[in-house]
Image (tube, one colour):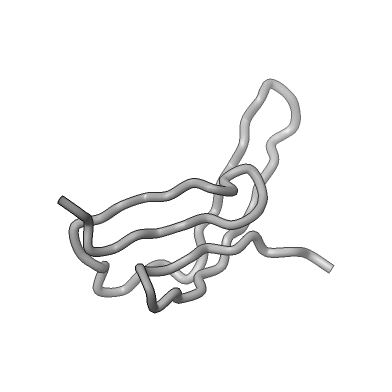
Length: 65
């Protein structure tokens, strides 16, 4: 059985992560925040939504200038 909606992450610590959902969300989040706690300083990454017609959407790592 295949899932109807796939969310992929591109770049940063979540690169390559794939989440599967039974159906598309009515209003997907425009930005996902990932906080990495590793015993040192807190590291925060932001991923911005980009649609991928073939399978769902992708969240791409936001690159700060």
